[in-house]
Length: 424
Image: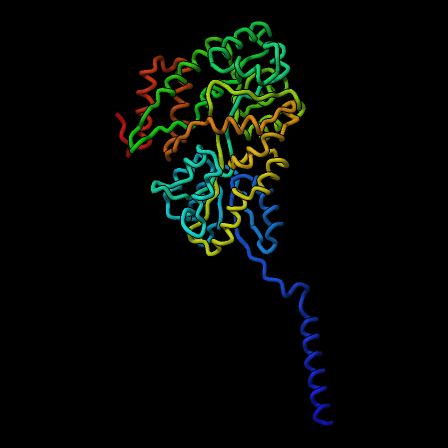
């Protein structure tokens, strides 16, 4: 009896101790500890994806750092080199993708366990072209689809073209000559109050992406010579409103209906038109223009020395290939992704009230398949934006008189900026 009593007392003591210890622990103590990753970007658009990711993976916390402005790429490069402050995941703008693609700080996503080559087949060819390094390994994945088209004012189209139906507007603006003819007529009939195009960038930006360098040598594509002729002709025929991109006048022209046609990519719907002309819902349409093109785009990469690669890959895979998430993103954020499987599924049903009920996913899904496929080089952004467009402006103002002079100036400036390149 005494032995039983001792055992009984010992059991009570043990149970009491367990209860006391349990009572001192917070609720959910048996749950696994929340892990964390850090994500950097130059915009805040990843916020939506992070919110949805954390809902799906509540055991992973994403520390998001938004570094807007021109210092992002410099700060990112510095962080990757110092290792101690580098993010696990980071975004790269299309303009900078090639200068980072072959550095050793981007994880090889073609290798196991990622096997990204098996996944990127869901993306458009023009996006895939810039996801791989010089050896063919995927180093960054583009999550944004950026095909372009011509946004047009429906009210102006009805007045001057007799219709605002995209199917009927498209054939009237499928060459620059047709657009210039419309511009001349509209400028006269409106008393110089309405123009076909906002500025010469509307033409030059429609040929974005053609590489300037091949095998270490400057190559001037004939298309760039064609652009020189087109912009000069556009000014001479008075079809340009002469409004600088991003200026107050440029924004006002959308709201007031002073320009008929604005070539633009998918993201322009949200960040250009809705932002600058919020009171014009229903007054816009989309049609193909003289050339298929894309503009901009954002890629996502993993730091090769991250100690949380499994978590980082979960985030990258979710952002690019989770169909349920991508469908939500498309519908709730009006966001056209790089995933053509999801976009094709949505094309039959998703429409935009801002675009007069037009099925814009249907339009962009087709446009994305027509975009020329170019593998950019690390020189393209600077040569195109800093050198060529400067020469183009000089040519337009007759400070450079001939195309031969323009070519000489381009070659001179490229040689000064990039002495390592071969320039004839």
